Amino acid sequence: MIQAVYIHIPFCQQICHYCDFAKVFYNEAVASDYVQALRNEIEVNVTGNKQKVRTIFIGGGTPTALSVPQLWVLFDTIHEKFDVDHCEEFTIEANPGDFDEEKVILLKHYGVNRVSLGVQVFDDSMLEAIGRAHKVKDVYETIELLQKHGFSNISIDLIYSLPNQTVKQFEQTVNEALSFHLPHYSSYSLQIEPKTIFYNKHRKGELHRPEQEEEVAMYELLKNSMEKNGYTQYEISNYAKPGFESKHNLTYWSNEFYYGFGAGASGYLPGKRTSNIRPLPAYIKQALEDGHPLLQIEKIGFKEQVEEEMFLGLRKRAGIDRNIFIEKYGFSYDVLYREAIDKLIEKEWIDENNNTLRLTDKGLLFGNDVFSHFLLEDKDIERVR
Ligand code: SF4
Image (cartoon, rainbow, N blue to C red):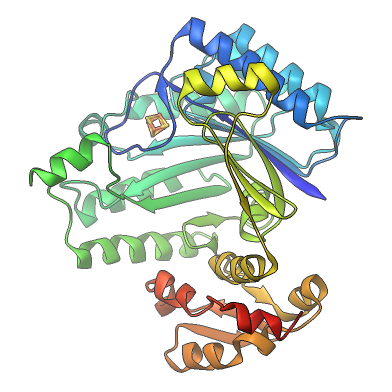
């Protein structure tokens, strides 16, 4: 029933100027305590025989910032509690240049079969300007090392709409990324989040971001280049060759259940969403004490579940299949949403073919406006209970 596992490793060798993820500078002693705390959290919450899951994703932070002995503890715990041999996708996030051959061999040994690399741009001066620690040459060396050890399922993350970035510069980044012929690429536009270095600069008027038309041009350039090279945009920000779509991320967008372990991690279990404590000392203390380092449990009722099915499903380019919806909920989405759907079709923000609702290219640009049409009131949901 629970399809996926997310494990958060909040350590980084550097802090990027735009990042608001749960992370701190790597410190060996703290990381060792953290791994023990994580071990306890997993052991307390996953009881009984090894559990079968479709996907495992170790994200961060930078998971490969952990030392080899710390990685052993982490991977041994995962293998004790989950049936890794029958897991379809086992991903780890990594930064170019931050892991060596010993760690690559260790990942292979423990069954990791997908690596997601935070590349961001192919431009050394821009990498420095956004606070990244790696250089472009590290990307080449890391991919070569991974491929030498049999990793073929590699994904690259890119960011666009960076300060002072031109469309031409982004085009060069996309072309260089595509020259690796990898099976998967993700690309996000820069978001200025509170409590980041970029946020402070932005408030002082020191951040020169591309105009909105340039951002749209970058998005379109990316999409066209990917499609021209045989990649399908299977989610707003994700492109893959057939069969290489991230199964783990599809769990989120398909509104399926998953565990979330680690500081600041979120989980989605039957009837509830959970979020863990984010500050490291508090997380470690609580996880070691009783294995339940929870900050919040949000009850997810039937109404929220249906709403999320629509928001998340529309993020996928495959859209929402009416028959799968009926199978899951026992009624068609038409019962609750026919009027909203017709309105959105008229605006050309979604289309409906072969019993499937999809966001159109135009709708992709108005994602949040589209999603707001699928909010329900309690009285609506009474009609189908
Ligand atoms: S490496 Fe990743 S998680 Fe760490 S600071 Fe940079 S963007 Fe954030």
